[in-house]
Amino acid sequence: MLRLGIDVGGTFIKAGVVDESYAIVHKVSVPTEGDAGYRPVVQNIARVAELAAREAGRSVKDFALVGIGIPGLLNPRTGVVVSAPNLNGWRDVPFLDEIRNLLPAPVRVGNDANCAVVGETLAGAAKGNENVVMLTLGTGVGGGIITDGRLFTGGHGLGAELGHMVLHMDGETCGCGMDGCIEAYCSVTSLVKQTRRAMEADPTSAMHGYAREAGLVDGRTAFECSKMGDKAAAKVVEAYCRYLARSIGSLVTAFRPDVVLIGGGLSNQRAYLMDKLNALLPKYVFASDVIGVPPVIRATLGNDAGTIGAAYLDRM
Image 1 (cartoon, rainbow, N blue to C red):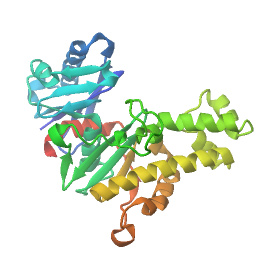
Image 2 (image 1 turned 90 degrees about the vertical axis):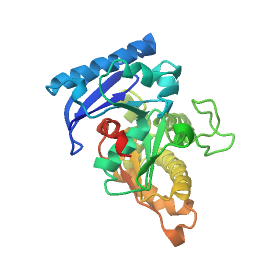
Image 3 (image 1 turned 135 degrees about the vertical axis):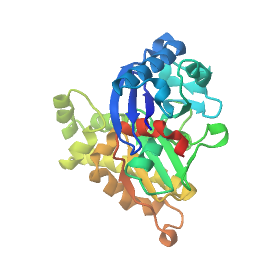
Image 4 (image 1 turned 180 degrees about the horizontal axis):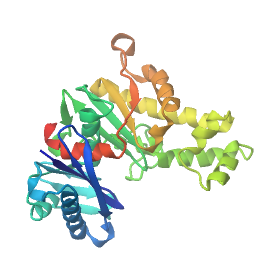
């Protein structure tokens, strides 16, 4: 029986009709319109569900489940979104009650990063594993955990905010307001800051020419110039990989996953990033010489992971 997965982003709401083999058979999207408040967003979610159903030649009531991934802190049991900064600062929004009034099908809601790890575990790079940690490296750092085949969400479903564990006491200020978070060192946003600092310190770096040609400094700048042999870029990459490996090491020590997944735009560096992380990781994992360390690999489903995971939230 078909299911519907909906991924709510700050700009677009994407919906996918997902079959029993975890394949997305139809896709549609609509603008989020988050600046207008939460009720227009809820209405847009209902609209994208109807559009997706129409694409599949069905009605919404024909779906076994409508699963929705929200970019924020929420209680999946009550469906209350406690905080969603990327949705114009939602606070204590009774989301599940609102959307259930508009959709004539069973509805589940989850954090978008949790949806992504469910998708990757059911149908992607972590398929066949029962213990998984996933980090998504983008504007921020999202995270998801599967332990003994079940999605771990912490007390009241409000845990597993891996990007806001502290990596460096009194360190860089994070967008959340705390200092030293993993996100403040391992997000693409922080990587860009590190890259800009290195460029200011070394006017001869190849990163200047690369950025002029690309039209901006982004997460690729240091990595691509490091591949070309630029020393300043290589130092940025080396420091970034140490930050990320230290973060992963603590998560491995806490959860002992079978595999660690890296998603988000930076995962497109593929082996150049993964090889460095796998080489560094044993140094930062407790008892790695006795227990060993899990492989760090690239997530494979991209943006589809959240859609598939949302549609099958009830499986984990």
